Length: 136
Image (cartoon, helix red, strand yellow):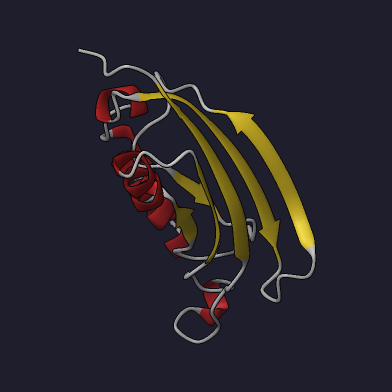
């Protein structure tokens, strides 16, 4: 007799998000004028005072997907992440070369706190974009 594997709300959400990312076109396909993209991400506690991590990298436009999301730094967070897809799309549409702002995680602090204790972790980001001639 086989038993179904139990999944947590966090695991189920991550699976759904992974599928959404996989089904999206690459950045090259969606944003033909985009030549390069550099991302600088800093994760902070909910008060924005303690930096938990920072990463800066140049995105591989051929392989990166246009659903441009990053997971919450809180490994117990349920249904939380930082989706920069709309931010990126707006920046490209406006031909902006730099976008900096912050985003608050809209997930829940942990499984026990679903619907009662918001995560509220903070992501400060900077996107640096370069454009080339439109590709056919």
